[in-house]
Image 1 (cartoon, rainbow, N blue to C red):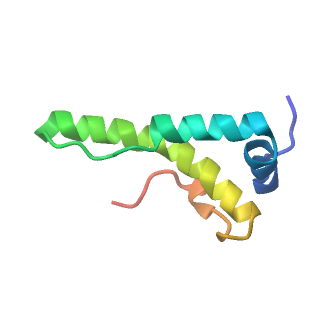
Image 2: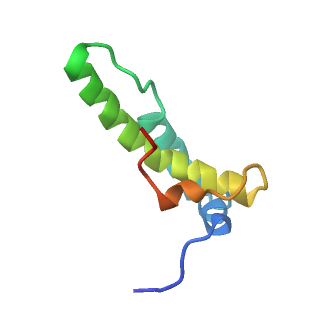
Image 3: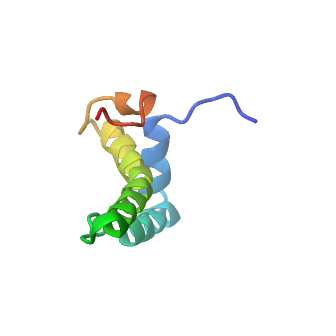
Length: 85
């Protein structure tokens, strides 16, 4: 295994600098970037939580790309993936 950590610049190269990476990012956005919140009591809350979890991966990718492009500050949220209650 490689000990080198992925950098924001790597995310930008893969998802913006390569035609296939851009297609994959479009597909991920289409699949996981939709509506997050679902009505319906406990069942709706579980579905909302599921969607938020899936969306977190897409949000991380986009945050890294934005950081590489100078559009966002460094993402320290990775240190604590659980938001404060």
